[in-house]
Every structure is written in C-alpha cells, then in structure tokens.
Length: 96
Image 1 (tube, helix red, strand yellow):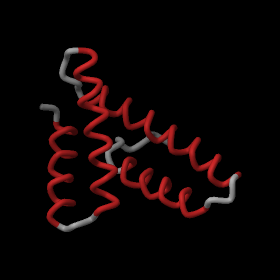
Image 2 (cartoon, rainbow, N blue to C red):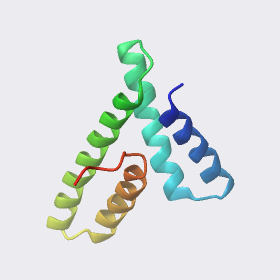
Image 3 (cartoon, rainbow, N blue to C red):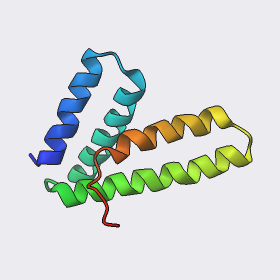
Image 4 (cartoon, rainbow, N blue to C red):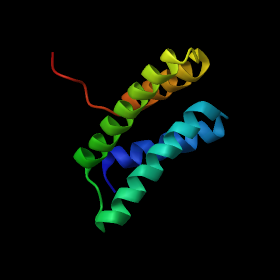
C-alpha cells in the first residue's frame, strides 16, 4: 500500500474515533474513489495516481461551489469548501 493511501486510511480511523463526521465523510469519498479506480484499472495506485484523483475531486468541488453560489445556496457552497480543505491536506506542497 502506498504511503499516501496508508495516511488517508489512518486519518479515516482517527476521524471515526473523534466523531468528526464532515471530515470522515470526505475521507470515505476519497477512499471510495481510489478503490473504484483500482478496480477499474485492476492495479494498485501509487501516490501520483492518488494525487490525480484528489486533484479531480477538488476541481469537481470548485465547479459545484460556482453553481451553488450562483443559485444563492451558500450553505452548500460552504460544505464544498470544507471538503476542499480536507482534500488539500493530502496534496504535496506546490512550488511557487
């Protein structure tokens, strides 16, 4: 198992223990996306593959935020922003 996947799995267990429902839901979505990709491609993903999935999930949430803001649904946009913060924790630091 890759280092990043192990970290995500450990963070899920910690969120479960600490009853952090928002964080737990986001991590479960991420693990489900990773598992789905592994099943589709019949391979184990490395850290680069997992980062690609995270980037895709962040992009989807940014698009959702735009739509929610246009529809004046700020509570849903805030939920998406919180999910982005959780997902960004697993991205490597970007070069400036």
